[in-house]
Figure 1 (cartoon, rainbow, N blue to C red):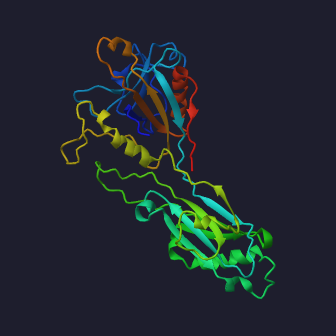
Figure 2: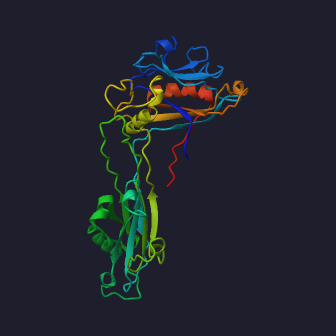
Figure 3: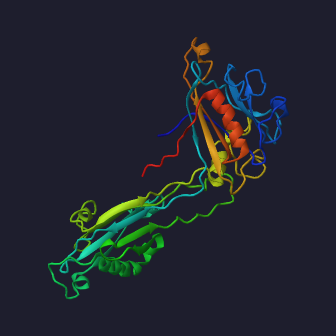
Length: 356
């Protein structure tokens, strides 16, 4: 769902370790972040809750025609204007999906197929309904002179599948295949590979950062793969158990992600320049506080106009606002900042759940 909140982004510089303790917004150095009360005094964990409102401010490198960058008025608790606030912990690691296939029930005179259907943002632009690849073990591969009424040892099936899968170059670009266990406990383990990092154009007006992950469905069933019905045919007559042991997730708070947010919300970096022009000389006011390779935690505060009652004399359309604060994950500054925000807004909830 689209979010049309008027958004202001603040990225705390890695070098900042504490909130400022003296002065007001006019003494903020370039990049320095502070939380202030309504009277321009500094907010602390001890006085933030009692203030009529707080706001976030950050010093600029470019001060021509403008002072510090700041948010609108924020008031938590009963009677306040905040209706949602949460935190996303920084996690630079994106998990890959892992699936195990076991409990095969195959007799010597049966052929079976294994189908993998993979999806990602980029894969789905290349293949309709995802990248679908299948390998088939014909009856001759599984007979081996055995009793046709006795089920084949699962390890024999796993070994035969590994041989066939090794011959498929496309599948091996996206997956690794391995065997665990022996005999009746043998399992085929399918692990998605980490997606390739795509090229980063040296153009500040481009949007190079793409949120992407790969997830896949696995089917093992009787008979050869067909194109009769790509939706349901490979879900029928299953001859094994498919279990996901690890879900694919997104990384959160990477420096690439936060740098992209700086571009997306650049109109609030400089108060008198509303567009990000790409040509040299048009916009020298773009400021970035992101340090490459840093993992950032992000705080999201959504709120309504605190003074909306004063606007009721005429037609008034309420506009939600959002403040995003990115801070180095696990740093002393994250602890100090969160203490003041919790005092002002109440307990913060983490929103790191990934739905597959």
